[in-house]
Length: 109
Image 1 (cartoon, rainbow, N blue to C red):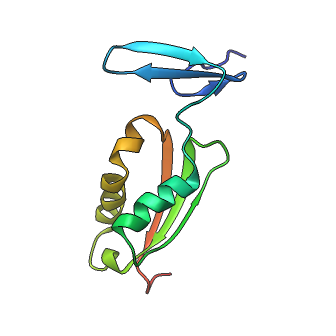
Image 2 (image 1 turned 45 degrees about the horizontal axis):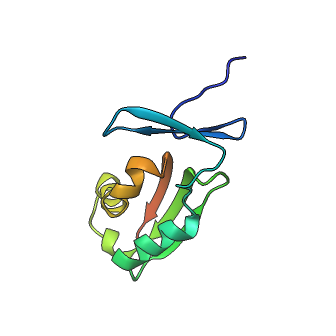
């Protein structure tokens, strides 16, 4: 079985990171760009102070976020997700490899 060495992924305790601006791949034993679930929660709380937020991750690059907010009232599920993506847009470029979103209004929770 061949191991994947995709940029930004951990493989055999090595981290590979792709930098788009200069088209390079770097490798190290440490990931300096690890994102903690609490970092994501903090960013979301700054923009959605009324929200109930839960973010989980086992590897600090794949996340599951549940966000319940009254600001989602009247918005389609797609619009709710776009609102979250807009808040996290910078980290989605390099630090967050995958983000599964569960968004609800208080009435749906």
